[in-house]
Image 1: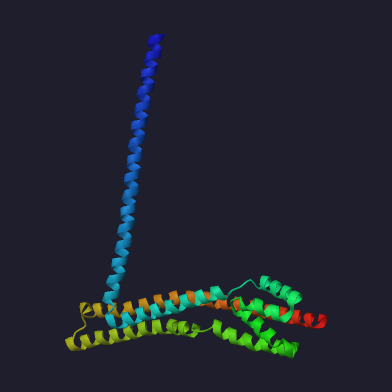
Image 2 (image 1 turned 45 degrees about the vertical axis):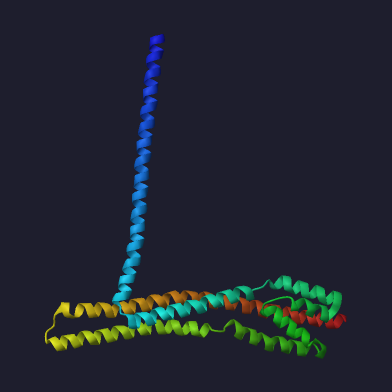
Length: 256
């Protein structure tokens, strides 16, 4: 029996050692595959950047540089608007509650003091309305509506430039394509023979400007739609809050 147990123990140990060796080999193979895939991914990323740079250079510095400039300017405008709109968006329900509490406790002056510490277009509209409260609720309502239009203009500031860049980028791309095609036909006319190798390079360069122009327009269009949706959301909040403020002022004037 002891011999049997000894043999079984030896077989078990051999099986355990073999399993560990096999597991280590499998782990090593897996790590090599992961490293290989990682290297391939890095190579693909590097090759993509190199290909993009190569195509950009092939497109020519004139029109490709203009298209790149429209992208940079468009992104600058888009980022500036997104930051501005992020700060302009406020919690209207909370603000209305604070203004109503200030009116009940200390009247118009305390509400104005509260609004001086607040930022955003809605707080500015509320302040202008309370400034005219001594002339009556109608005057306050007119001030709210008038200053609301001013704030809408501030929200939409520079958005027209973004729309311009969206329209101009593919136009410059198309212009580069047309000029490239003209140059290709000039080569055909000078050579007096229709050789594909003679014009293929010029046509390829011409089409690259169109591709990059369309890519820039697509990128800026996404930002433009996001900004317009954000502006519409803030304007809707402004309108709802303005109506609530006028109702609040009417109630305050009656209880005064």
